[in-house]
Every structure is written in C-alpha cells, then in structure tokens.
Image (cartoon, rainbow, N blue to C red; front, side, top):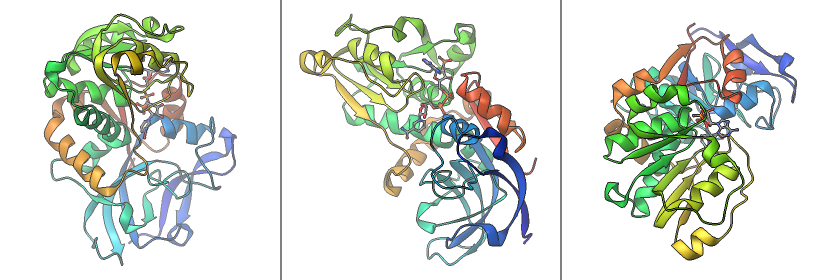
Length: 330
Ligand code: NDP
C-alpha cells in the first residue's frame, strides 16, 4: 500500500487561491474504520461551491472536497466491509466535515459505504454520482405520490445539468413523456437523445410567477428552485406532484398556496446527503434497472484531478453538460 497520495486541499474559506493539488500521507487522513483506494469521484454543483469557496459548503478547514467517491477497500475493521470490496459513497458530510473524494485515498466510517452495484463500474457509478442518485430519489418520490406515465407529462428543469440529464433518461425509460426546460436551447438534440419529447425555454419559467397557470404537467423534477419552482407549481395539473431537489436559480420560493389548496398539488422535498442506507440501496438498485448505460455514457466526460478547478468554475456558470467523472489516476 502506498502511503503518499495526491489530493485537492481547500485551506481557507472563500479563497480560491488556497485550493490546490497536494501530496498527503495516510496519517493525515481523518478517523474512520475503513481505508479506501479511491479510483473515481465526480463533479456536482455542490463540489463547484466547495472548490471555489463560493458558498459555505466546507465547514472545517483544511478540507478535501468531493461529495462522491468510488474505489476498493484496502483496510477495514468494520464488520460490513473487507479488504478488496468495491464500494461507493454519496454525501454523509464528505467535503463538509469529513475529507471527501478528491484524493487517491479516503478513510471513512463503514456505515457510510454501500457496495458498488454489480451493474456498474466505479467510473459509471461516479458518472451517476450524487446528481444521478438524487434524480432517482426524485423519481421515486413522484411514484410514491401516485404519479405514473398515464398521469401525464413530467417536466424536468435544469435539463442539461447533471440531475436534469439523468432524470430525463430515467423518466423516458420508465415510459413518461418528458418536457425538458433548459437555458441551452442549442442542446435540443442532446436532450431529445436522452429521451425528452419537448423542449421548453428556461425563460418561460424564470420570471415572476402567477399563483396559478394553465395545467401543463402531471409532475416535475426541479433542480432550480426560486421563481422557476413557483412557476412549475403553478403549471402542475390537478393532483400532481413536484419533487424539489435543487437551487440552481436560488434558494427562495416566491410561490402562493394556490396550487396546493386549489389543485391538490404536492411539493415533495428530496434530500440525498443523509438519506438512510435502505433508501440509498433502493435508489441504486433502481438505477441499475432503469438507467440506460448508453445514455449514461453519452452524457458523461472524464477529467483529471487538476481539471477539477476549471470544472468547478464551469458547473457554477451552468456550462457543464451532463456529468463529469474524476479519474484519480490521471
Ligand atoms: P448542474 O450545474 O449540473 O445542473 C444545474 C442546471 O440548472 C444547469 O445545468 C442549468 O441547466 C440550470 N441552471 C443553472 N443556473 C440557472 C439559473 N440561474 N436559472 C435557471 N436554471 C439554471 O448541477 P447538478 O445537477 O449537480 O445539481 C443541480 C442542483 O441540485 C443544484 O442546486 C444542487 O445543489 C442540487 N442538488 C441537491 C441535492 C439534494 O440532496 N437535494 C443533491 C444533488 C444536487 P440548463 O442549462 O439546462 O438550463
């Protein structure tokens, strides 16, 4: 086992110049009962915030960012994992209070790990990452509320982003008619290849909302929040449901209660970071069944550790299409 390895380290709050690739030793890792050789991580919106210091994601300094990781267990005193096991982790405070996935080694608590599903390589699991696992949780939330393909079309906002791209692929495979809302209308071919039937301009949903609008969709997966989410609610059909998982436009929600009390619309909160293991396992087994591997490959690109800095700027500026995988060997 090598004991020196490469990692990104963020040293101080809100100072991008302090994030750099460094060499760490095993003795510098945080406490945990499982040591993992990390082969892949990914870039999510939250990683963009942590690496650039743009918003308070990191709550302890110095910090290795990266909310996702996949790799192989090297040493373990956990009852549930042994040396050689392939695993993945999403969230659980990685990059916030515990060193995360932008390092070739990680020391973790066994209860955060899940076995890598047989359907996926480590690289594919990270192409899915927190974004894809959250898209799956969002679809499950709609289903649990009784939404099905016969209910009507499903709107996906932030469509060309990570959560959006995977939500479209999942919903299309499940037989839904998908309306994709994007600010990147030139990505229409990409979005239609993922399974969208209709493209809606982001501008149509980002202005001041009316309490109620025309009933247009039976449900939605919203990764945008703010005025967009208010407009999404106002356009949801009677008895429909909206899974809210993101804040790409903003954290506010300038909505009225009209969709809830006049149309019985449900607003469903989706949280991935501290979701219980049982729920994670359910989501990952659904991903193995319901995500087309060719679509996953079409929406993903692999980068090196050093390229994470540029990718962090790009994802916050809405310039990343689909998903970015970080190959820790590069
Ligand atoms: P991405 O940046 O990949 O996707 C976000 C997309 O939102 C962009 O690609 C863009 O899509 C759209 N967008 C960006 N800025 C704006 C804007 N100002 N107004 C309207 N639309 C905008 O990020 P992720 O997919 O990784 O994450 C999406 C959101 O979900 C983030 O807010 C993230 O924090 C949240 N999230 C929450 C989780 C949870 O546990 N609840 C877990 C994972 C993510 P387009 O160009 O197509 O319009």
